Image 1: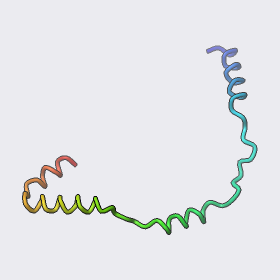
Image 2: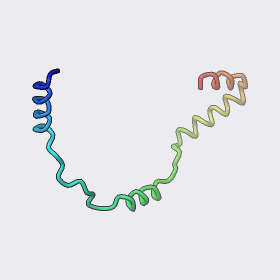
Image 3: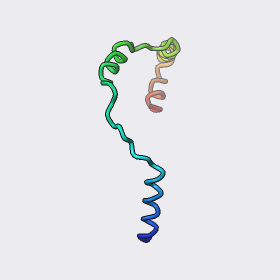
Image 4: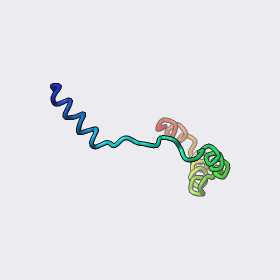
Amino acid sequence: MNTQNDQKLRELLRRAITPVADLELKRDLWPQMLRKLDERAFQVPWLDWVLVALLAVLFFLFPKTILGVLYHL
């Protein structure tokens, strides 16, 4: 591209993207983040427990499947 095309492109970008006037945050976000982290507890859905139980039974009944599962991980 030549300089004339560069100038046109710059001018089009200046018109399309307006500068942001106020970059300061209105409030501190850290206390809100700490609150969200405190209220979120680690929960495992019941379906995951069912799948773990099925795998345990499968491994107990057919021990050679452990190698097959490990191979696919």
